[in-house]
Length: 157
Image (tube, one colour):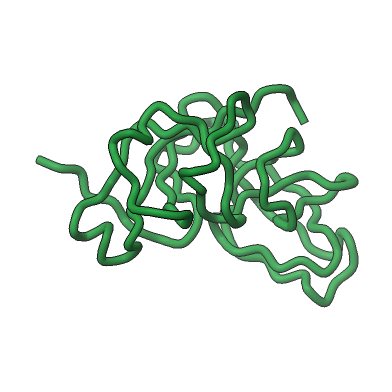
Protein backbone atom coordinates (compact mmCIF):
# COMPACT_ATOMS: atom_id res chain seq x y z
CA UNK A 1 0.00 0.00 0.00
CA UNK A 2 1.29 3.48 -0.88
CA UNK A 3 2.18 5.92 1.85
CA UNK A 4 -0.13 8.86 2.41
CA UNK A 5 1.44 12.23 3.20
CA UNK A 6 0.08 15.57 4.26
CA UNK A 7 0.84 18.13 1.58
CA UNK A 8 1.60 21.37 3.42
CA UNK A 9 3.51 24.48 2.43
CA UNK A 10 7.23 24.32 3.10
CA UNK A 11 9.43 21.50 4.33
CA UNK A 12 7.40 19.08 6.47
CA UNK A 13 9.20 16.75 8.86
CA UNK A 14 8.30 13.09 8.35
CA UNK A 15 10.53 11.85 11.19
CA UNK A 16 10.04 12.10 14.94
CA UNK A 17 11.83 15.02 16.59
CA UNK A 18 14.85 13.67 18.46
CA UNK A 19 15.33 13.92 22.22
CA UNK A 20 17.61 16.97 21.94
CA UNK A 21 14.60 18.62 20.34
CA UNK A 22 14.15 21.98 18.80
CA UNK A 23 16.52 24.94 18.74
CA UNK A 24 15.69 28.63 19.15
CA UNK A 25 17.31 31.71 17.61
CA UNK A 26 16.43 35.43 17.61
CA UNK A 27 14.90 36.62 14.33
CA UNK A 28 16.56 39.22 12.08
CA UNK A 29 14.94 42.65 11.66
CA UNK A 30 12.06 43.14 9.25
CA UNK A 31 11.58 39.43 8.51
CA UNK A 32 8.39 37.37 8.29
CA UNK A 33 8.96 33.61 8.44
CA UNK A 34 6.39 30.94 7.59
CA UNK A 35 6.18 27.47 9.08
CA UNK A 36 8.30 25.14 6.94
CA UNK A 37 10.69 27.84 5.67
CA UNK A 38 14.39 27.01 5.54
CA UNK A 39 16.30 29.22 7.98
CA UNK A 40 19.82 30.59 7.62
CA UNK A 41 22.01 32.38 10.12
CA UNK A 42 22.96 35.98 9.31
CA UNK A 43 24.94 38.02 11.84
CA UNK A 44 23.71 35.77 14.64
CA UNK A 45 20.03 36.04 13.73
CA UNK A 46 17.66 33.65 11.98
CA UNK A 47 16.39 34.67 8.55
CA UNK A 48 14.66 33.14 5.57
CA UNK A 49 15.88 35.89 3.25
CA UNK A 50 18.44 33.72 1.43
CA UNK A 51 16.97 31.41 -1.18
CA UNK A 52 20.03 29.31 -2.02
CA UNK A 53 21.43 26.67 0.31
CA UNK A 54 24.57 27.90 2.00
CA UNK A 55 26.75 26.94 4.93
CA UNK A 56 24.77 29.17 7.32
CA UNK A 57 21.88 26.70 7.32
CA UNK A 58 20.06 26.36 10.64
CA UNK A 59 17.00 24.21 10.03
CA UNK A 60 13.29 24.37 9.24
CA UNK A 61 10.90 26.77 11.00
CA UNK A 62 8.45 25.03 13.33
CA UNK A 63 5.90 27.88 13.31
CA UNK A 64 5.34 31.23 11.65
CA UNK A 65 6.92 34.33 13.20
CA UNK A 66 6.19 37.83 11.91
CA UNK A 67 8.98 40.24 12.83
CA UNK A 68 8.37 42.42 9.77
CA UNK A 69 7.87 45.50 11.96
CA UNK A 70 10.43 44.57 14.62
CA UNK A 71 14.12 45.08 15.17
CA UNK A 72 16.72 42.32 15.22
CA UNK A 73 16.07 40.02 18.16
CA UNK A 74 12.61 41.43 18.94
CA UNK A 75 11.22 37.93 18.39
CA UNK A 76 12.65 34.43 18.37
CA UNK A 77 11.82 31.34 16.35
CA UNK A 78 12.02 27.63 17.03
CA UNK A 79 13.40 25.42 14.32
CA UNK A 80 14.11 21.77 13.57
CA UNK A 81 17.90 21.53 13.24
CA UNK A 82 19.43 19.54 10.41
CA UNK A 83 20.26 16.25 12.07
CA UNK A 84 21.05 12.85 10.61
CA UNK A 85 17.96 10.75 10.18
CA UNK A 86 15.48 13.59 9.69
CA UNK A 87 13.41 13.13 6.54
CA UNK A 88 11.24 15.83 4.99
CA UNK A 89 8.69 16.14 2.21
CA UNK A 90 8.71 19.30 0.09
CA UNK A 91 6.98 20.64 -3.00
CA UNK A 92 8.86 20.90 -6.29
CA UNK A 93 8.61 24.46 -7.62
CA UNK A 94 10.93 24.43 -10.63
CA UNK A 95 10.40 23.55 -13.36
CA UNK A 96 8.64 20.31 -14.29
CA UNK A 97 6.91 17.27 -12.85
CA UNK A 98 9.46 15.39 -10.75
CA UNK A 99 10.39 11.96 -12.11
CA UNK A 100 12.21 8.91 -10.81
CA UNK A 101 15.38 10.27 -12.45
CA UNK A 102 15.58 12.88 -9.66
CA UNK A 103 16.06 10.20 -6.99
CA UNK A 104 19.64 10.24 -5.76
CA UNK A 105 20.29 13.86 -6.69
CA UNK A 106 21.29 16.74 -4.43
CA UNK A 107 19.30 19.88 -5.30
CA UNK A 108 19.08 23.51 -4.26
CA UNK A 109 16.21 25.62 -2.98
CA UNK A 110 13.95 27.46 -5.40
CA UNK A 111 12.26 29.61 -2.76
CA UNK A 112 12.61 29.45 1.02
CA UNK A 113 10.17 26.55 1.11
CA UNK A 114 10.45 24.61 -2.18
CA UNK A 115 13.14 22.95 -4.29
CA UNK A 116 14.38 23.30 -7.87
CA UNK A 117 14.95 19.84 -9.39
CA UNK A 118 16.91 21.35 -12.28
CA UNK A 119 19.41 23.04 -9.96
CA UNK A 120 21.49 20.03 -8.99
CA UNK A 121 24.47 20.74 -6.75
CA UNK A 122 27.59 18.63 -6.62
CA UNK A 123 28.41 19.13 -2.95
CA UNK A 124 26.54 19.92 0.24
CA UNK A 125 24.68 21.87 1.33
CA UNK A 126 21.59 20.66 -0.47
CA UNK A 127 18.46 18.54 -0.30
CA UNK A 128 19.07 14.89 -1.20
CA UNK A 129 16.07 13.30 -2.93
CA UNK A 130 15.41 9.76 -1.70
CA UNK A 131 12.00 9.21 -3.26
CA UNK A 132 9.23 11.08 -5.04
CA UNK A 133 5.48 11.42 -4.69
CA UNK A 134 3.56 12.01 -7.91
CA UNK A 135 0.35 10.38 -6.70
CA UNK A 136 -3.00 11.85 -7.73
CA UNK A 137 -3.33 13.36 -4.24
CA UNK A 138 0.10 15.01 -4.47
CA UNK A 139 -0.46 16.38 -7.98
CA UNK A 140 -3.85 17.78 -6.92
CA UNK A 141 -2.00 20.02 -4.43
CA UNK A 142 1.16 20.74 -6.43
CA UNK A 143 1.28 19.98 -10.16
CA UNK A 144 5.04 19.29 -10.05
CA UNK A 145 4.81 16.73 -7.24
CA UNK A 146 6.84 16.30 -4.05
CA UNK A 147 10.30 15.14 -3.11
CA UNK A 148 11.05 13.14 0.03
CA UNK A 149 14.57 13.25 1.38
CA UNK A 150 17.04 14.76 3.79
CA UNK A 151 19.41 17.69 4.06
CA UNK A 152 23.11 17.27 3.48
CA UNK A 153 24.70 20.19 5.25
CA UNK A 154 28.45 19.82 4.79
CA UNK A 155 30.69 22.12 6.81
CA UNK A 156 29.20 23.58 10.02
CA UNK A 157 27.68 27.06 10.00
